[in-house]
Image 1 (tube, each protein chain N blue to C red):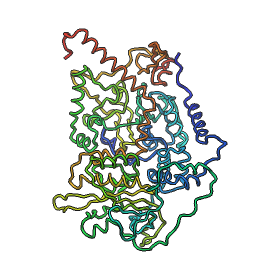
Image 2 (cartoon, rainbow over the protein chains, first blue to last red):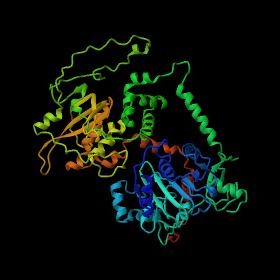
Image 3 (cartoon, chains in turn red, green):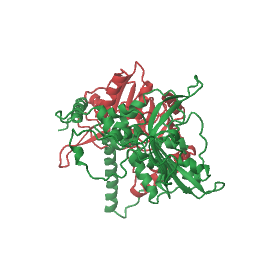
Length: 263
Length: 367
């Protein structure tokens, strides 16, 4: 049932496919959609990596990785290069993905228009008509009022020139990585019971205007651990006097860079 | 200095060990047995069965024990178990009109065939803390006085009204097998069978609030309890290979039928309409609230104005499930620092522009 939904999703890039999501042993909102998608595509030779906020050692990533090691007996890794399936929440790894890799996103709200129109019956109609004026007007108002888009994460993207899609709550910094990515990108929303996909090399464009192109953002600092000026950074509060420290959110990429490994 | 947050695994193990100790509480106090929960916290067990959509008192009691009495957590445990079970058949519709009745009351008639049967109810108890219960080891209460069951049929009030033509007849059962909320995602507009499934497993508190709102003008309800009944209904299965129906046991259910006036529209004459509530176990508040909300959700089909929250199908059905709701509300506990970091940078950027424009108000606009 899930594989059929995935196939449909791949056939219609960016289009949300309803599926009969089940209760999982983890709560809704904690990656049940991603878990169901991952479980349905894992094979005996796969190597699984699970990240949350870019890191392998965040508690929910640890919990999900352990769940699959225990229930599926699958090999796990923290190294992006070694993984064949990567389940993620809120990030796309810094290391470019390959054709033999699948990235599974945990999605809280699959409907990109939900803040503008909460009714699913209505958003379905808008998608059918490719009527995305609500999102465009919102973006226009943001720019008119405050000079730039107000959305810093989960910025909507147009997939293959047709469907507006939520990229899940990844920072805008990661949006460009969606475009023509060699890996298969699968999105699972368990509570909302939707699956969607971006097949390899599909054009994905962040919603913007010609004269106000989409501008990904990153804290203007080098990583305090590896020195990278290209990776997305977490901001760490180090004292109560305004002290801050910036470190890579992608723990694997940070370790690679610190060790001087080629990226 | 910053130390990378390692050791999530050890922290999780330690948290689980602590949880197990907290669940047990003071080891000097005797451990709670499942039989005690099932027998003495029976309404909690019923609520967990109803919201967990799984009729098994023993498993519900186990879930309550495991969840430390958190009934939503217990319903979740039961759901996660239930979803692993094979679904082998759909039962015939329950004949609640023929249930073995433990309680049956009607607010619309002073007396009626089968009579009013109070049963084991809190109604008419005075809500004074009974400190005698605090003294443990008291002998069990004397048996309640019993009367011989009349054996007289207990026709449903809604049927009595329907025979007079005053009650709107429901549309005959839709396609068999009935739709299954647990197999297919909800789509809108949802047929009533699916709506009732969603309400039956919906959160009692959420439905209570919505039902209450319809009584206070948000949804224009004029409800009467035509009938509220609690009892054991036979579950009948019709295996195709047998060719005849067989009874596979009884389940305790609470059923509520509310009567509401309806002005009529188009071809439909003025008549009563029905709000229907049914829940596993003894869940009166739930069944009544469900009946109110079911009736409110009929607005679209009856051509009434849909204005109140309780009449809004998407709003009600997509927010009534407490396992979904608690998961999504509580997921805010998970780390969100990547998103928050992007919000920080965004706000700093917008603020910088704001400050610059304030400093030079006549500067040429960006556009």
